[in-house]
Length: 69
Image: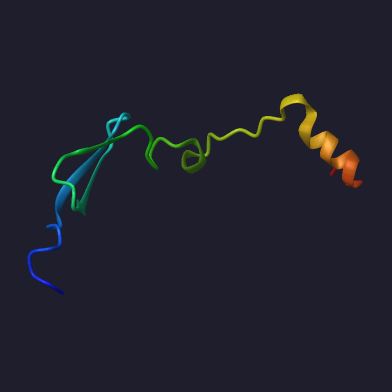
């Protein structure tokens, strides 16, 4: 690798709106602020809900002949 052309890889803190802080390394010298992380994301916390708006799942089943289970 050529000297002097690559950015420095330094310690960085990623802060989420929920208050979670993650220590990592990055070429960014500043703190990184994010809106959602794995500690507060519904998919990872198990709070995710499947919402069938306007009967899309039922229409799909009727169209392609799948029966209710």
